Each structure stands twice: as structure tokens, then as C-alpha cells.
Image (cartoon, rainbow, N blue to C red; front, side, top):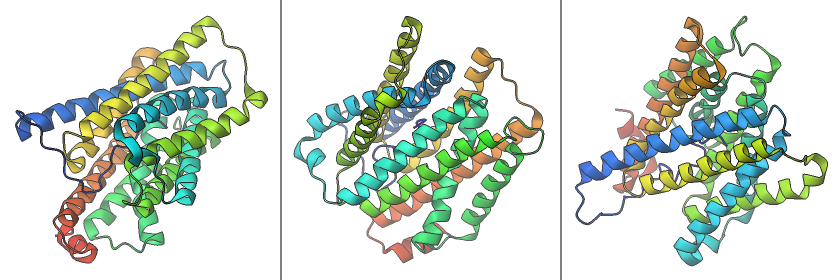
Length: 326
């Protein structure tokens, strides 16, 4: 739950953005891009607070605070969307997606407690690569050569980050990798849910699953928090909630295929904040690995956007994938 493309709103599903009266398409897209960049900047700042909290606060408690913010956001969105937010036709898939999002967020927080913020963030952003691999294996999706190349580039970037002697060469690296895996699982489940449930319903279901499960186990891990920790927790939740609201507003103004790649600005924000707050400085291989992971993810999201636009025009899935590969 680091704010990466696991729960982007509404996601690259081919929906046409609404027409904004009195606003040109270029201006609307520019504003939407700024909103996405602002959102991921807030997510990176929320991760800074989360990393600081993991020093003295149980990781489950840190995740629970985020779910409080997520549930509050879900209720606000549900109130705005009306009955569609409460109508769930795929409860089993929604429950599984909620578990995947919870596992992804929990593992990422565990990783922050042991790894540098920028590199943990970069590894977690291999989610689109994992999602594409899952789509090939589980959904039998055809993938053209250029996307295969992007997949390999992303995997090479991960191998460079996990190299012997690097900051991520430790068992703790499994935490952000696991986070990316479960994030990709959530993406695949979102695809299976498709248009059966509204995006607001999906957001609310995932928030409820995590909040209820964590609250039920609270007696096992809850610990009193000092005033400073409470302030940090409140700041983390606020950054996360405002960031999600910015994402929702952004995806209501611009095409998902245009906006999704800009989520990788979070890697840059994580690097800047990691240096300012924690004194992190990348070596050459780490910078190269982070760059390869980001480039791979941006390209994969771009091609998914091309495919979504073609499908929105009424093409069959097979024909759209053939055109997108050209």
C-alpha cells in the first residue's frame, strides 16, 4: 500500500474521461498530470512517516493507521457515488483482492523497517512487470516482443538491485518483492472483476477487508504510542488519504493511459526524501537498477493504455492486442 499502481483510480480500463465544461483537453490533461505527481509525492512522504514509525511501532499498527485513512476515503467516495458503491456482484473476488492489497501493504511496511526507502520503493514498483507475467500465465494473454523486452529490462533491474554487496542483498528484500507480487495479484483480480462492480465498490471492499481483519487482531499487536508517534501516524494517514483523493480527481480529468506512467515519479520522490531524511545516497548500480525498473514499468503501462484505447473503440481483445503490438 505504498501508493504504487495497485489501486489506481479507476485504472487503465479504457473508460473515457468526463467532459469538463470550459476546460480544454490539454489543460485538463496537464492539471491531471500535476495531480498524479502531487499524489505520488504525498505517497512518498507517507512512506517516510511509515519508516520512522516502524522503529518503535508494530508494523501491523502502522498498516492499520493507513487502513483507517483508506476506509474514511472509501466512505467519502461511496457517499458521492451512491448505490453503485455498495452493490457488489463478485464478493469472492473482492474478498481475495482485499486480502492481496492487505498483504501487499503489510509486506511493504515490513520492508521499510529493514531497507532504504528509495530501493524498497523501486522494487515494489516492479508490480506491473509481475502483473504482465501473471496475465501471460493465468489469463493466457498474448504479449508482443516489445513488451517481452520491457519485462526482461525490469527483471534485469531487479537483479541489479538485489546484487551481492548491495543494500537489498538480504532476506529483507523478500518483503518488497512479496509486496509487488501481491500487488500484481490484486491487479489480476481487478481485471477479473472487470465492470461487474464499480471502482468505488472495489475501493470500499478492499478498505473494509483490511480494516476488519487488522482490527480483529489488534489485541495481539497494539502498543501505546507516544505523542510524537501519534503525530507522525496522523500525518501519514493524511498524506495517504489526500494523495488518493488527488488520484481520484486526476483520473476523472485525464486518460488513465496518459496518467499511469507518471506514478513512477514516486521513485524519484522516494530517492529525494531518502537522501534528505535518512542520508541515503545511491551508488551507480543502484541508480541503474532503479532506472531500469522505472523504465520497464512506464513502458508496460503505456502499452496497456494503447490497448485500452483500442478496446474502448470497440475492437476485439485479440485484434486490439495485435494493433497495440504494431
